[in-house]
Image (cartoon, rainbow, N blue to C red; front, side, top):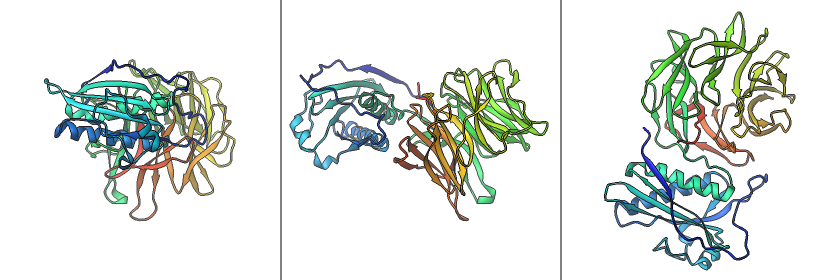
Length: 435
């Protein structure tokens, strides 16, 4: 359930440095050394306030550390003990431990029962405040506030939007390998707050978020026939988009949320179709004797990327949104599949099968810049963070007890991490930033 949250700017003075440029990470460089940053426990009265303050500080620390761009310093190294966030810190004490940035904050319970959380971000060497925000919310929504704080810090220090206040919808898998129960599930991007959206009575596959992050399409098998559902995450209401015999890949939304694009198998071959969600009118975009599948819109909605074996092997193609100008863009070794357009529009992620390995990689929309981010026994299903800097995918492990787990990797390919889930997990889809 979405919880109420109010956000206002903190009206505090900024302490300007006379000659030093504002602190910022250049994330366009391929080999970024993580920025040392000190994140103090948020101040609060003993009890609920202090406990919430420590918890929020921990989540902010974990978010920033997982991004690979920040190196949070140990609290044991801190010299100054913060007692008032409205008083500038002793910058020299933070320079001694080589901290470039400092985060301070406090938590207070309001008389109406709301939680007030505020923080300051300081440039230690420039001796100036970079930003400060204040949030009002219900006490049980503290974790989301922590993600919003991390987003604000990330944006101020990188110049790009954060991705921490987001969710992942995925397929949770349980039971023996030959009788897996697959439930549609959702969790925060860091693996917390997981819960099921379906009961496991029917097989579910390939969930996809709508642009407003409130609805999900997914494929389910009803009486052994593929059926596409549209589920409202907040209300739990779902509707049948349609029964599609021979569907080979679940639909994805258009950027405006008015259409879905999908692959349907009719007459012995699979082609790309769109459906208008209001009129339910279906339009065919490709017409080949091959298998055209796995379509994904560009963020501006003008183009679609998809995979096809029309040239003799699985490769990636791009066409205009009306089906015109279909052309191949992948020409490297191996078979390319599951292309997904970046929210930034600058890259297309893919799965590639080569030499017995499944790799996750990216290329530019014209096919240039093809490079591998990670490889292994079985990697599949890339999905983009909303800022286009991180990918999540699932990786299958070998053996009778093996199964899929979720992983993330950034565009450098060096920051790869497993995402915790309570069961096996596959088919992740990353939400847009929560509104």
